[in-house]
Length: 189
Image 1 (cartoon, rainbow, N blue to C red):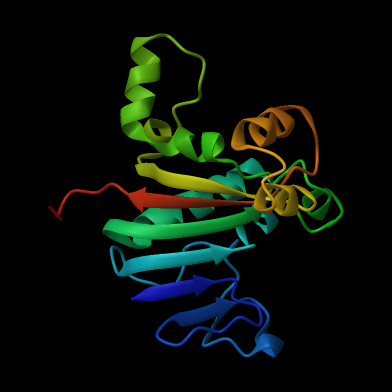
Image 2 (image 1 turned 90 degrees about the vertical axis):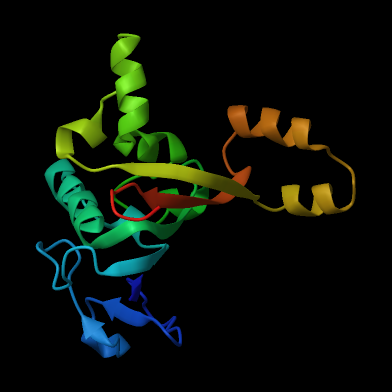
Protein backbone atom coordinates (compact mmCIF):
# COMPACT_ATOMS: atom_id res chain seq x y z
CA UNK A 1 0.00 0.00 0.00
CA UNK A 2 1.17 3.54 -0.81
CA UNK A 3 -0.34 6.55 0.98
CA UNK A 4 -0.37 10.11 -0.33
CA UNK A 5 -1.19 11.77 3.00
CA UNK A 6 -2.67 15.25 2.95
CA UNK A 7 -3.01 15.00 -0.82
CA UNK A 8 -5.09 18.17 -1.25
CA UNK A 9 -5.74 18.48 -4.97
CA UNK A 10 -2.67 16.40 -5.91
CA UNK A 11 -4.17 12.97 -6.48
CA UNK A 12 -1.72 10.30 -7.66
CA UNK A 13 -2.54 7.16 -9.62
CA UNK A 14 -1.59 3.97 -7.78
CA UNK A 15 -1.71 5.65 -4.37
CA UNK A 16 -4.40 5.94 -1.74
CA UNK A 17 -4.96 9.69 -1.71
CA UNK A 18 -5.86 10.83 1.81
CA UNK A 19 -7.04 14.21 3.06
CA UNK A 20 -9.19 15.45 5.93
CA UNK A 21 -11.24 17.66 3.59
CA UNK A 22 -13.93 15.68 1.75
CA UNK A 23 -14.46 18.60 -0.65
CA UNK A 24 -11.03 17.77 -2.15
CA UNK A 25 -12.38 14.35 -3.19
CA UNK A 26 -9.66 12.13 -1.68
CA UNK A 27 -9.89 8.34 -1.88
CA UNK A 28 -10.10 8.33 1.90
CA UNK A 29 -11.06 11.09 4.33
CA UNK A 30 -8.87 11.05 7.44
CA UNK A 31 -7.76 13.68 9.93
CA UNK A 32 -4.12 12.74 10.51
CA UNK A 33 -4.12 14.47 13.91
CA UNK A 34 -6.70 11.95 15.15
CA UNK A 35 -5.08 8.69 16.15
CA UNK A 36 -5.13 5.78 15.70
CA UNK A 37 -5.21 5.90 11.93
CA UNK A 38 -7.42 3.47 10.00
CA UNK A 39 -4.61 1.44 8.41
CA UNK A 40 -3.34 -1.86 9.85
CA UNK A 41 0.05 -2.32 11.50
CA UNK A 42 2.97 -2.75 9.07
CA UNK A 43 0.74 -2.38 6.00
CA UNK A 44 2.33 0.57 4.15
CA UNK A 45 5.30 0.41 1.78
CA UNK A 46 5.58 4.10 0.96
CA UNK A 47 4.20 7.41 2.24
CA UNK A 48 4.22 10.89 0.74
CA UNK A 49 3.91 13.95 2.96
CA UNK A 50 4.26 16.78 0.45
CA UNK A 51 3.78 20.15 2.17
CA UNK A 52 1.78 18.44 4.92
CA UNK A 53 3.91 17.70 7.99
CA UNK A 54 4.49 21.37 8.81
CA UNK A 55 0.70 21.73 9.22
CA UNK A 56 0.37 18.91 11.77
CA UNK A 57 0.86 18.68 15.51
CA UNK A 58 0.82 22.17 16.92
CA UNK A 59 0.97 20.49 20.32
CA UNK A 60 4.06 18.32 20.78
CA UNK A 61 1.96 15.42 22.07
CA UNK A 62 -0.08 15.45 18.84
CA UNK A 63 3.03 15.58 16.66
CA UNK A 64 4.64 12.70 18.56
CA UNK A 65 1.42 10.65 18.24
CA UNK A 66 1.58 11.22 14.46
CA UNK A 67 5.19 9.97 14.38
CA UNK A 68 4.14 6.87 16.35
CA UNK A 69 1.31 6.22 13.87
CA UNK A 70 3.69 6.61 10.92
CA UNK A 71 5.91 3.98 12.50
CA UNK A 72 3.02 1.66 13.35
CA UNK A 73 1.59 1.57 9.81
CA UNK A 74 4.97 1.33 8.03
CA UNK A 75 6.35 -2.00 6.90
CA UNK A 76 10.05 -2.66 7.52
CA UNK A 77 12.14 -0.38 5.28
CA UNK A 78 9.11 1.69 4.23
CA UNK A 79 10.06 4.93 2.51
CA UNK A 80 8.58 8.24 3.65
CA UNK A 81 9.15 11.27 1.43
CA UNK A 82 8.72 14.53 3.31
CA UNK A 83 8.76 17.87 1.50
CA UNK A 84 8.33 21.04 3.54
CA UNK A 85 9.01 24.75 3.23
CA UNK A 86 12.23 25.74 4.91
CA UNK A 87 11.39 27.40 8.25
CA UNK A 88 13.57 30.42 7.41
CA UNK A 89 11.75 31.11 4.15
CA UNK A 90 8.86 33.53 3.83
CA UNK A 91 6.63 30.75 2.44
CA UNK A 92 6.85 29.03 5.83
CA UNK A 93 6.60 32.19 7.90
CA UNK A 94 3.68 33.74 6.01
CA UNK A 95 1.22 30.81 6.32
CA UNK A 96 -0.69 30.83 9.63
CA UNK A 97 -1.49 27.13 9.23
CA UNK A 98 2.21 26.21 9.45
CA UNK A 99 2.61 25.08 13.05
CA UNK A 100 5.90 23.20 13.15
CA UNK A 101 9.28 23.63 11.43
CA UNK A 102 10.61 20.38 9.97
CA UNK A 103 14.34 19.91 9.37
CA UNK A 104 16.49 16.79 8.88
CA UNK A 105 18.13 17.39 12.28
CA UNK A 106 14.72 17.22 13.98
CA UNK A 107 13.78 14.04 12.13
CA UNK A 108 17.11 12.49 13.20
CA UNK A 109 15.87 12.60 16.81
CA UNK A 110 13.77 9.50 15.96
CA UNK A 111 16.82 7.38 14.92
CA UNK A 112 17.57 4.85 17.66
CA UNK A 113 21.16 4.22 16.51
CA UNK A 114 21.88 7.94 16.77
CA UNK A 115 20.00 8.07 20.09
CA UNK A 116 22.33 5.41 21.51
CA UNK A 117 25.42 7.26 20.24
CA UNK A 118 24.21 10.49 21.83
CA UNK A 119 23.53 8.78 25.15
CA UNK A 120 26.98 7.15 25.12
CA UNK A 121 28.57 10.55 24.47
CA UNK A 122 26.31 12.22 27.06
CA UNK A 123 24.97 14.66 24.47
CA UNK A 124 21.79 16.61 25.19
CA UNK A 125 19.92 15.61 22.00
CA UNK A 126 16.50 14.23 22.94
CA UNK A 127 16.47 10.48 22.10
CA UNK A 128 12.88 10.45 20.82
CA UNK A 129 13.30 7.16 18.94
CA UNK A 130 14.10 5.33 22.18
CA UNK A 131 11.53 7.27 24.21
CA UNK A 132 8.69 6.57 21.76
CA UNK A 133 9.76 3.10 20.62
CA UNK A 134 10.05 4.20 16.98
CA UNK A 135 13.04 4.02 14.66
CA UNK A 136 13.39 6.14 11.52
CA UNK A 137 16.59 6.86 9.65
CA UNK A 138 17.17 9.99 7.59
CA UNK A 139 18.36 8.35 4.38
CA UNK A 140 18.94 11.58 2.49
CA UNK A 141 17.88 15.18 2.27
CA UNK A 142 18.15 18.02 -0.19
CA UNK A 143 17.51 21.75 -0.26
CA UNK A 144 15.86 23.60 -3.13
CA UNK A 145 17.38 27.07 -3.31
CA UNK A 146 14.98 29.98 -3.58
CA UNK A 147 15.13 32.61 -6.27
CA UNK A 148 17.29 34.46 -7.09
CA UNK A 149 19.76 31.84 -5.81
CA UNK A 150 18.49 29.14 -8.21
CA UNK A 151 19.10 31.39 -11.22
CA UNK A 152 22.49 32.49 -9.94
CA UNK A 153 23.55 28.85 -9.54
CA UNK A 154 22.24 27.92 -13.00
CA UNK A 155 24.14 30.84 -14.55
CA UNK A 156 27.34 29.82 -12.76
CA UNK A 157 27.47 33.13 -10.89
CA UNK A 158 27.66 31.51 -7.44
CA UNK A 159 29.11 28.21 -6.30
CA UNK A 160 27.75 25.70 -3.81
CA UNK A 161 30.00 26.96 -1.00
CA UNK A 162 28.65 30.50 -1.39
CA UNK A 163 25.08 29.21 -1.23
CA UNK A 164 25.84 27.11 1.87
CA UNK A 165 27.41 30.11 3.59
CA UNK A 166 24.38 32.25 2.71
CA UNK A 167 22.06 29.47 3.89
CA UNK A 168 23.71 29.46 7.31
CA UNK A 169 23.36 33.26 7.67
CA UNK A 170 20.29 34.51 5.87
CA UNK A 171 16.59 33.90 5.39
CA UNK A 172 15.02 33.09 2.00
CA UNK A 173 18.03 31.21 0.62
CA UNK A 174 16.41 27.75 0.77
CA UNK A 175 12.79 27.42 -0.32
CA UNK A 176 12.04 23.77 0.39
CA UNK A 177 13.60 20.82 2.17
CA UNK A 178 13.03 17.24 0.99
CA UNK A 179 13.85 14.37 3.33
CA UNK A 180 13.76 10.64 2.65
CA UNK A 181 13.00 8.86 5.92
CA UNK A 182 13.11 5.07 6.31
CA UNK A 183 11.27 2.97 8.87
CA UNK A 184 13.79 0.73 10.64
CA UNK A 185 11.91 -2.40 11.73
CA UNK A 186 12.81 -6.05 11.96
CA UNK A 187 11.41 -8.32 9.30
CA UNK A 188 12.89 -7.34 5.96
CA UNK A 189 16.44 -7.92 4.93
